[in-house]
Image 1: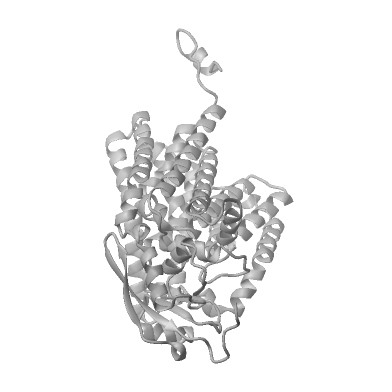
Image 2: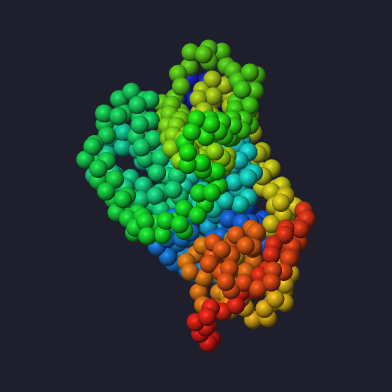
Length: 490
């Protein structure tokens, strides 16, 4: 279609330019094609599973109201994929990359409300400038992808409601928030931060309807209620990953200082590569008069929402007495800041520098696509582990184990992928049951067996090592006898 403005303001013949809708379709097509390639490379490289993939493979084979350590939504989605595609690496990768594709498509369309197609695409793909996303997260995470998608949808929905909305729009927000609560525990910060951040854009807060927000809250809580009740009934299982936080219950000043230091260190490392890219481009590509350019309203909103989420996360670290913070935990809260900052930076760049920002994100995405399959086999090499040898070692301890217990998802998930027919039980997933078998333990055997309630049924430990490309991963195989009550016949 001819651009009438270009025709009237430029000499010579009119210039044919594609419609914005065509550009949007091209960007969405590139996103879908990129993540389809990620599915293909995941299936082609590495028969083994990463720890989070192994967890999903283990638990998603059955439908439950609640699961150990994580809310259930990701496992429900994965269960549906297993039903359609069969339990396989393909089904695992299809779910993961479908969620990622939906995230980038939703973020791009959201950013289009405040930017042209190239600017929105550059801001969306600036997420690949974050090392913990483009490298670490894309290699092995699961639930985090889902909470990032629902964070983007929540922010987009609240932004839309700040322009005026009907009751059904607030019901949609409630639906998204309910799914968010079922995706990962740290989503709880997102709705509040999304609403509070509207204060960064004058006139937006006042357009929200209190009754509509109450409706959205009730819908979200109703959706999450069954799982919340399950968590209340199974607190030990539901919070079994809290140990990663390094919690010290004393809440003394050194504990608070250690938690704050860990949070700040993780935050600085998280934003380092993206911030460096933005600084370099501003240094070499700032356009004339850029200092007077206003920060786009959407950019202010995204950065304010991210700052609010990070503040709430830090307060939760202090309230729990946590002393360890992993950078990947900041992904849902930190990525909106990167996208918003990219929009703000683009408003100050010359067109060529803006294109360079888009190219930097695209090159990071391509580097991740090309290199990660190989690096995943060697660093630390979980995908290349010899889990068939582990299966043979288990059968040497017990030729026909009725149950295989383990304190590690890595072993159980990969054994399930191999088709191990025993009942595969995680050590904290309910009572151990009457049937014996073999325990595969990554922790000291005495401690793990005591926690699992199996110390009175354990035989002589057998040392073993799972062969990884980077070296052996030691485990201990322990024969487990049947309970005194006996094991039912097959």
